[in-house]
Amino acid sequence: MTRRPDGTPLTPRRGGDGMLGHELMPGEKGPQDACGVFGVFGPGEEVAKLSYFGLYALQHRGQESAGIATSNGDSILVFKDMGLVSQVFDEGSLEALQGHIAVGHTRYSTTGASVWANAQPTLGPTAHGTVALGHNGNLTNVQRLLELLIEREGMAKRLDLKGGKCTDTAIVTALLGSDGYESLEDVAIDLLPSLEGAYSLVWMDEHRLYAARDPQGIRPLVLGELPSGGWVVASETAALDIVGARQEREVEPGEMLIIDESGVRSRRFAEADPKGCIFEYVYLARPDTTIAGRSVQMARLEMGRALAKEHPVEADLVIPVPESGTPAAVGYAQGSGIPFAQGLVKNSYVGRTFIQPSQTLRQLGIRLKLNPLREVIAGKRLVVVDDSIVRGNTQRALVAMLREAGAAEVHVRISSPPVQWPCFYGIDFPTRDELAAVGHTMEEVRRSIGADSLGHISLEGMLAATEQAESRLCTACFTGTYPVEPPVAARHLLLSQPAEA
Image (cartoon, rainbow, N blue to C red):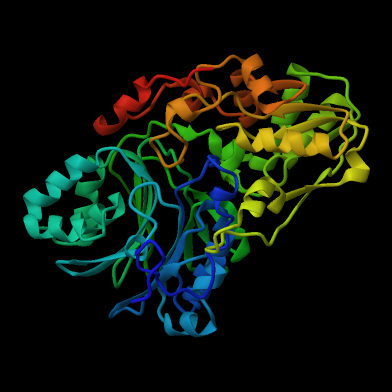
């Protein structure tokens, strides 16, 4: 077996997984979502190719691995690997995935290592066949679920999990194989109320497609209908658009769907208590997605307009940090009357590489992703709009780069409030004492990143932009108010001491 210099096995790949390694910005790691899920029930359709394009539309939700499982009514076949959707699949692998039901997944790891064994969909036996499962979110009661698995299945299952399949998704897959039920549907309707945390699940057996969303509906999940009469479920409406499906509705919090040749049936396993993730509006979702009836693009534009009212400044240009800051920057320009310009060029083809950068490239840091347009920004007073500040390293490097390119002033505006608390529901924020806003005043953060001024949108301004009631949204990363009890093993993170200023 080929190994890396440190002795760890090197898994053969077609290429890098397509995302720039955070090591190029030392100590920096932006907010990352858990996953994207896609499922299709489409007799007569090329369901593997539909899944491929659906996952392509959801690539932003996870770039570490991708997989598709299909069923032809008799058996389930899974193909998955590390990397981007376009790197994992080719025409030959998609042609091999025959059938009329499919489940697809693209992953960013929040629990379990980023290795092939933890790629999804996960596959497991049941009393009536096989189950293939994809999960977006993060469960908070994994220890209790593992104990339940041991109670039901004995130590053998636990040993299997310790052998590599250590994710919450693997545990749920194993529990769906529990004996003593007449059908997979009955297993699921009994199991789902036991799951705590965030979960948008899409799974299938040889004959049916299933979908479920946690009672808080923290992560999005939508249902669409194909022109042929088939059905699609996906993390975002943009994935429905790309395969030509018409959005039917959102999967309700606390609802399970069962889809087969008879159509779509709904069963409720818990009362709905909506607490959708507000960070979907800020950053996670594609701008061409709609969540709870609100266009993400329009929400971000409105966040920018509100930011201009709350933190005005005299300046010559508004420029975005592409791509995530672009809609809010347009909104800021509209709200302030300051001209909008593209002052930074993003290298769209820079992705994560398994080639370790040299010290020279490390020092270049953010320039591998972004490069300033000197003729646009030289001598100008700039308003630079971004979606969030996590550790602050990216903003610090960005401000320094703009000043080096000749900017007269750099005023940083952020379209979300300061991130002050960890997320336990699928966003991989750093620990609390690593967050720039914890233990530091706004002025201290401003000095740290080197900006002439710094302004965050207010919680009220951000909420208003979503057009959703605060009671229907999870704002835990900004407020520390968690809709679902954090896992016992992680509660010490809420009490950790912030770093010294």
